[in-house]
Image (cartoon, rainbow, N blue to C red; front, side, top):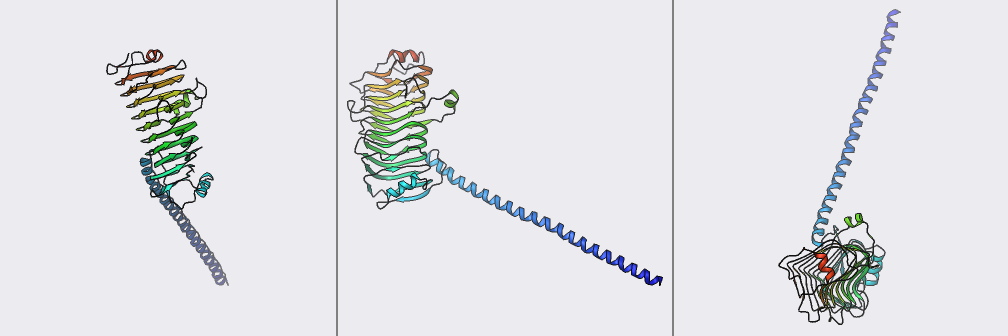
Length: 368
């Protein structure tokens, strides 16, 4: 009887151990499954790395575009513009933000008449030498950021501008031929980081290039402001009796103005306060510019000139109607450095400008 009892006890104990072994096996399997989940997470991580690699590839393309376009890190989607393109539809989609990040690539075998186009944001307009003509503003750049306009032959048949608008940031306008109109390029109210390079502008009645920034900037705003570049442009007015200013800078300007040729205008370059005469700061490296057949070479009407360095310029030569190479009005106030070096003039300066220069000139300049 006792042996039977012991046998039953032994069988129960074996059963318990067997159940425990099964449970332990399940736990081990569960432990193995958890690292398997970790492997799945690692797969996601690999996928994320692949996405990062894609981002790097995109950045590489963007950098290439930035190098070609000056400072625009944008990868463009091509839109081929032809004679049959529906500009009303294109303009509506640009204005509504449906086309952003596009390069509008023009067929240069077409003459585009009654032309008018808005630019929007992050777009490039490549003319390839296409001829565009219109009675209104040809390109409207209102509120545009990161735009490029290059390679067009533009003709304005009435008193408008080839390129016109307000509040523009990061723009490159280069390699265009602009004829006629009231203004060649007119950007008003505010702008920052604008490049205007290697354009030919002629036959206008007011300003070849006009950049106006009305903002009242604090010292920190001024320090953080980007620089603009106006370079290698050839600007030819109708005559000093018919064309007002080669380049007009109203309010704030910070940057370089170099390598330009300006002729047949009343004033070569004007810096002035805008809207108030005493509003606006000026910091400019003014170099290698040739200004002739004028009444005024530089017309200075800016109240806060923080830096003005004139180097390697020819101003007032071949100018039978010259009044002043450099004229400074009663509003002109030099708050910082003003210098003149290695430049040639026809010989007439306003006393206010001479006083502001002080001893900052050298013997290579025929300075009074």
